[in-house]
Image (cartoon, rainbow, N blue to C red; front, side, top):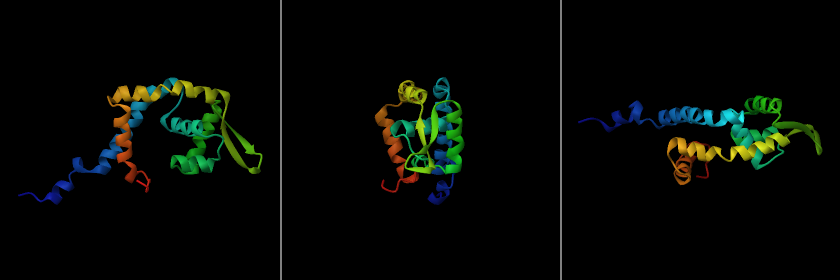
Amino acid sequence: MTDHREDLLKLENQLCFAIVTAARNVVSIYRPVLEPLGLTHPQYLVMLALWEKAPRTLRELSAELALEPATASPLVKRLEAQGLVRRERRPDDERRLAIGLTEEGAALREQALAVPEQIMARVGLDAAQLASIRDSLAPFSGNLDA
């Protein structure tokens, strides 16, 4: 008779391994969909956050994306070099920079509307199935309200 605890140690039964593998694969699934938009997956996440609310500070953006500001800053700088975002001094506090969308960055949202459907087609899941998977990951995503 095998010990159930032994089965729990098998690599194929590890949630952490499944999540890490899935995360790596998700990025590769998104890559060809995002390339025509000129965005990498991390840049796409920044743009999604800015399309929801802009302008915002680097700290606000970093918190929204669960990134360290030191990680988000180079993403913002690359998007600025591409002409999609701009960093400006905030009128209420000259010491802080506000990150906003350029006209080109705002217009890119129209093209991005096709991304979710393309991803669903690539993985063979509908919006409800993807939402269910996303919601089931909440306990592991820093979302303690789940």
